[in-house]
Image (cartoon, rainbow, N blue to C red; front, side, top):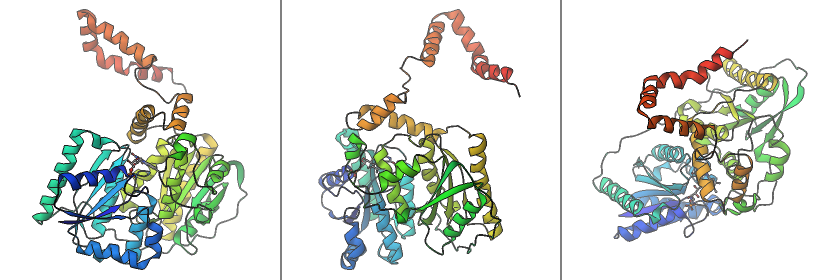
Length: 458
Ligand SMILES: Cc1cc2nc3c(=O)[nH]c(=O)nc-3n(C[C@H](O)[C@H](O)[C@H](O)COP(=O)(O)O)c2cc1C
C-alpha cells in the first residue's frame, strides 16, 4: 500500500516526536511505501513553488491513503500546517484528496488534543476523504510497550479498512456559508471613557464584514477601544517549537511580538478578538499570532482580564472551534464574556449582537466580573500543573511562575482539604462515627453552603 505522510511538525522529520510513530510503523508493519512531505517546515517553499505544491498533490492522487502526522499546537495544528490546508482550498485542489482514506497521528501533552483531532477530521471530510478516527499519544509515549502495541494495532485496523474499501461514517456536515454583507450603522458619537483599556485585535481585510463589525464595536462601547490589526505587526515567522523560550521566557525571533505583549496586551483590561473564520478555524495569520504567544509558556498571565469575540463566518457550524478558542482564554483565567457573529439574517440583528457584547464588556469594566471555572479550564490546569512539575528543569519559566503564584495545588500539600481528609479518615476507623458519617453524609456535604446562605445579606 502507498501512504503519503503530511508531516505538520515545524521540526521536520528526525526531531519530530510524532514522526517517530510513523518510523516505528514502517518497521513493525513492513511492505508498504511511505512518501513523507514536511509541509510545516517547508511551508514557504510550498507557498511560492507551484511545481513543488503540485508534486505533493500528484503523490496524493496516486496514493492509497493520506496520513496526517502532527503536534497539537495551541489546541489545534501548527499555523504552518493550517496554511497548507488553506492553500489547498484557495487553489481549489480538493479533488486531489477526494475519495482517499485518511487518518491522523498526534502527539501532545494531551491538552485539547481532541479539538485538534476534530479539526483535522472535519477538514479531511471537507476535502472529500474517508477519515478514520486518529491516534493520540503523549510526546514520549512510544517508549512504552503498551503504546507500541496500540499504535501497531491501530495501523493494522486502518490498513484493513482501506484494503476492504469499507464505508466510513461521516462525522460532520459540510460547511455551508453565504455571508450577508454587513455595514456598520451610523451611530451618534459619544464621549469615550478612558479609565480602563480595551484592546481589539483583528485580522480584517479592507472592505470585509469584519472591518464593519469592528467599527460597530468601537462605536457601541462606552470606552475608547484601541484597534490593532495583527496583519500590520512585524511578526517574522511562525513558532518553530525550538523550546528555547521554555528555559528563558524569550523567543528566538527578534520582532514586535514581545513588545506588543508588554505594551498593549498586558496593560489591557479587556481584549476583543476579532477574526474571519477560514475553513474550520480562524486564519493562519491568527494561528501564527497565537502560536507565537507560546513564549509565555503555560503561565496564565492574562489572569483577570475580560475576553470577547467578534467572528465573521459560520461560527454555529463549528462548535469545535469555539470550544478550543475560548478554552485557551478561560485556562488563562480570563473571563470569556461571549461572541457575536455576522450569521444573523439582517444587519440590525448583527448590530444588536455586537452592541450586547460591547455592553457586556463595559459593564464588567464598571462593576466587576464573574469569576468561575468549568471542567475545560480546571482540567487543563491539572494536566499542565503535573506536566510542568515533571518537566520543571526544561519548563523552567513555567515552574518558577507556578511556584511563585501558588499554582502547584497538589492535594497532598498541607492545607484545609488535607486536614479535613485526615479527620474523616480518623472518623472512619470507629464503627460509631463511621455509621454516623454514612447516615449524615449528605447533610455534611451541604453544610458549608447552607452556612453561606444563612450569613447572606442584601
Ligand atoms: C506553540 C506550541 C503549542 C503547543 N500547544 C499544545 C497544546 O495545545 N496541547 C498540548 O497538549 N501540547 C501542546 N504543545 C506540545 C506539543 O504538542 C508536543 O510537544 C508534541 O509532542 C510535539 O510534536 P512534534 O515533535 O512531532 O512536533 C505545544 C507546543 C508548542 C511549541
